[in-house]
Length: 354
Length: 254
Image (cartoon, each protein chain N blue to C red):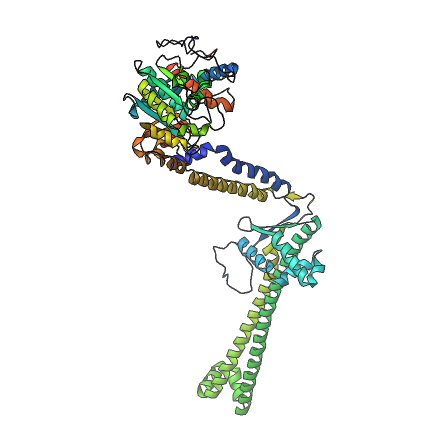
């Protein structure tokens, strides 16, 4: 079988080699010359893990800060809210108000925005657009919107924390005031015992041990006071953490390379290479298909093995290569030449020397 | 030294005994074709060893019995049956100088022998059959003393029936009595219905198959018209491998 395939291949080598050569040769230049040109704006940012208030660092140690921030930005770009926020900062703003415009915006950013990590803390942002202004505006808008979103998140979280601890303080203060009032009222009701108990800790302790009610009130007052102090310190810590987080937010996403207005259009030649390669693959496929067809459709006898099924093969007369003789005269030339040599039976052709 | 002047002990036929060449034969073309063919083929081993090749063929075909008629046929035209017929006739004549060999051309649609041997095309086999002349007038000598040829003759309308006549069988019988070996160059089996009748007159048949050209189904169809007992075997003509030699060595039998 391999012999038949090789025979068919070498017999029709020009036909079989033509598709894988011709198709890429035609498609390649076409793809290169028709590759769309665009403008591209680059930006680079130095990023860190997001800092959350009083939250343990629950990020996986195996996920790099650049991956975290890049993933976060990618997810945000898939939301309509963030995307339209970005678009409003560009010349695409008029499109935001219509569904068709929003679809177009999504298409532009889906195809034009490329995010890539470059090391553990570096994120590269590329935005391609049909005009240099849009390329620049798009890259800048993404950076601005993301930075604002980060800062807004930090402020929101800080405010939530401060509000929480402030409400705790209020509760603690109310509880402490209530307990103090209850203690004071009890002491007033015991007439003088309160002053004695209140001024002398020893005697007060002794009195408390003698009066369980007094002891209970005094303990509650002490606990509520402690809770108040703890809430105050937590609020202070929350304010401190908030301030630190806000500062950290700025440090967590620093634009190192701001986007520039692109000056010249570029062509994605690497992407255009896929067409010649696809043409080569298609040409090879076509050649293989033709080869299979040639082998399958060849019902002629080419070797003695093909004739053995019919009977005895007496001999094989190889094809003689007759050169410098017109094609139409070659069979006669071969026949005569064989006649000369086989027995010199034919008249000598003039000028033929052995 | 010319090829014809080689020292085989068989001198050329004298000009007196050779009929005048037919005006249709172009001597210039003949010389040019033969000279070019010889000069372009002479370095090819198969050309040099052509006699050995045809010796193998006729030996395997069992040629050698006296008064034997051997028909060389093919399914279609242009498969090389005349080449094989010439090769066998010439080789047998050369190998058995004491035996007489005649090569009879019966394919009146493609007459070539007269042109190849540079002899008169007429009168030929057809003229003798239809005209009632003796076959002796159609026999032409060649450079080999014991080899004669019978060209088919001039092509005229209505000659297709000549091969079906009893006179044709009579001619074959006469040649069988006169010569030790009669080689018939038969028309294509599927192109001429007379071919099957001619093979019936022969003692053995050699089927020539053009390599890479004739479909096996066509060969089978042609062989079905033959007497199976008479088929001596097949000759694959024009075999050529397009695979480079180094590749054939690499893959073995390819």
